[in-house]
Length: 102
Image 1: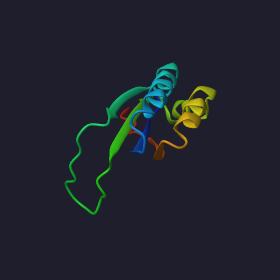
Image 2: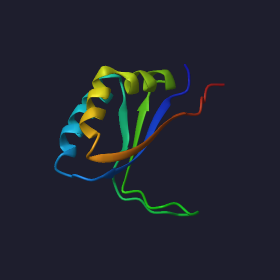
Image 3: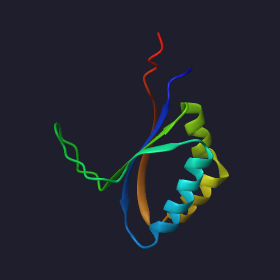
């Protein structure tokens, strides 16, 4: 079994009413590609360093980095991105988790 893949995103929403459609489409795409939300908004608190407080953070777990990329590159998620285009800004990355198998 390989390490899990995590999509981490920082979101700044410009139109809270319009973002609901993006949320609906992106949630369906995450679920279709086997993803699971670990963090979706919620309160955050800076404990150390010079972070700028994020408006909203999202962490989604996938079975692998490859599966996370399949989600991101999918037609379903690209449709969601198109909806989000002018209503929110997003920084997103994919990161490999720790492979705890010995």
